[in-house]
Length: 378
Image 1 (cartoon, helix red, strand yellow):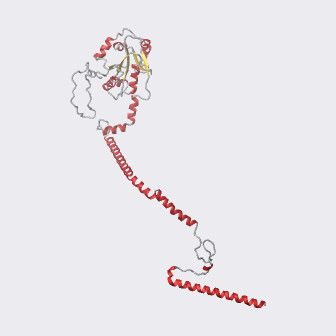
Image 2 (image 1 turned 120 degrees about the horizontal axis):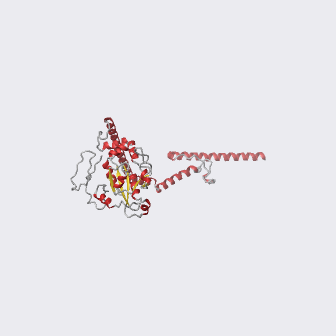
Image 3 (image 1 turned 120 degrees about the vertical axis):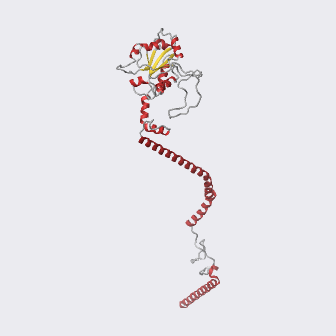
């Protein structure tokens, strides 16, 4: 069973640095310290602290407060509301429950009872956090005015009288224990029970289930942080497997970083060279160059679609424009290439003379035929 000191240690706090000797030891505030120097906000006092005892002494518990009076705010003192629980792995569901209890009446003094480890283990089971950790988690919640350590499982009249409790706050779901269907049933019958609402989707059991589901992930993480296999209750083979997986993940991460670095370098170099590539492209295929290429292509296309007419001095004797040649140029000859030189010219001259002699001969023969025809006719 957890034991709490009768008084908080008011001795000066040591400021010497503490060197952790194991992963569980961290530099932190002393467990029991004097909070008098904290003037703005302080944790809620325990029920045996002077502040809590003074508040309880000033309460006139002889004047009973009904639910209607408390709801209407027609009270001469603060309404003392009590909420209890295990508060293991203190989460937002716990905080919301305490917030509802604090605001259930206009003027509430909220007392929270937390069961110790021995009672919790016997009645409900093992907890993740020990009693001291659960006490500290609750007393640092801003809605709490007082903490009752070692709280009982079932509330007796003596407990209610000693702590001067007016109402008990809890969710309205029947809570059975020790063969009793609902331990809050007597309080409900006496009108001393006020209901709060549970926060759906979150509970200590849900959080534990998440941890169990991802057990390997958390073990690997804690091994990487320096915890030993013995501290994590892991076998030798499992430890080696987890450490190998951590090493593989480290290599993968390193490979991804290097690949990202290479990609960034490639992109940077491309951005530097892109301007040069663009300028060279425009120089080769800019507007002026494209116009020049188009004009050259257009001329070739036109020449292919519309070939030129027959050359001058063709065999038919027609000019390229379809008109007859002059009478002076009636001579027909075959024009030889220029490379034949003077010999080519002489040969062309001979061909011309022979052509003229042949024409004269034909004319003489035609004339003789005409004369012969006239003689026969006469």
